[in-house]
Image (cartoon, rainbow, N blue to C red; front, side, top):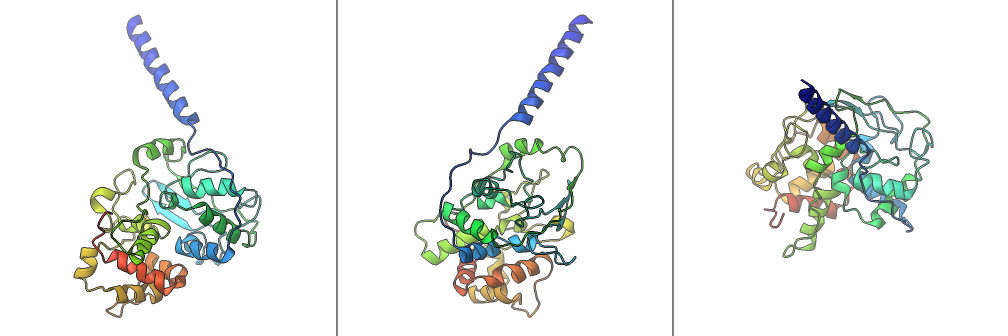
Length: 299
């Protein structure tokens, strides 16, 4: 009996030590000094391309731009987008550009805690220092809103943020934004936007039970399990070509929301167009369409 007790005590002690180790396990790279002059207009453009306006502005409730509060129902609980205005208490007004860079590219908060991957930071990991400086410059023009977003409503154990460290270790993957030799500048620009800032795979790729993308088998194959019960169609090149999409028609739809059959995008995609892709240049919409309608050699 004593032996069993000792073995049980050892097991509990080992498990407790492991749990504590995970909880205090630091994540993210150390803060790196970033001293570049940002371009406000380019930063605003990148924010539009990245979907920041749509995700952090509660249009339905008449919320102020980037003040957060957008509801996101997931299988693990309900998330609310945070306040990203320059308010020092409820927004990011007290952040430094270095903390901003780590949050955007690594998904780590100023106090070292991991963000839920509903924040598409995995797609932003390859943003350059200049991209960050431009975004930061644009953010400094956002009026402060002294109102907190709502608290996250995640069920146990998903409300324990330390558990996200294990999720990151198992599922975090780098974005596929590097230029691919043999493809022209338009194709590679489309790749940079689609696989990076625009984070198209976040909605159009299936996910496993842990909420991680099935990138190896279902990249752009669509998803029937979006937050709130919404669905996203397949946008792989085979499906798009089979459904009669062309570079011109897809670029047009990304500007207007009107599809070749005369119907319009609804739901989340309607917001993507209204607050995101409609603000892109014709050249960038063409690049996105060119990339999506190609076989993605080297992808």
